[in-house]
Length: 193
Image (cartoon, rainbow, N blue to C red; front, top):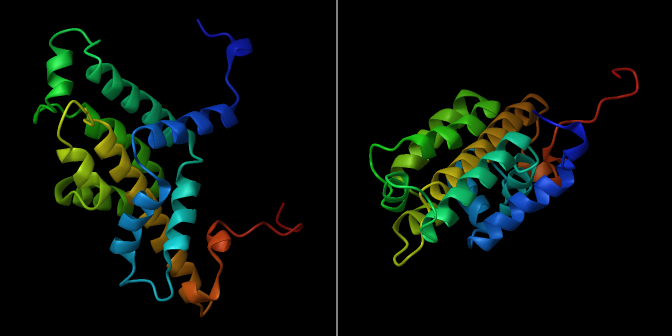
């Protein structure tokens, strides 16, 4: 049973998702560096600031926020050894045949189309930047879900940039012609509303 009176405002969910990333040692710039590395050779004038802005836009999506909150919570519970057996051991050891971490991350990527899906697959295999650090972090840290979630955010942000580049090409422009804040969708004119 759900009660509409207990709904949490979306701003709170967004803040909690970003706070969870930071708590786990992942900054927006860490993710943006992956996006920049993947997209710089295809997009003239692209800057790290463009990539940060794209990551910020991805993090506005509820699907992404929800995936982050669930995945990070499971990683943290596994670190505290609060999960039931055998799930505790499966998540703690990042069992190779356990695909739920990728499934949750992939679910949030679908919003950004086939480019995001294939990019996520690439990042899942290549473990670029902060993803590699999270995947191989020694000690008691459990990042079974987090490394895939970071990959999904980077893949989605890269897809946004690829699609925006196509729009810019059609307008005879490049990323050098736009400010990072202009990376979002163009506002509708009063005639289109």
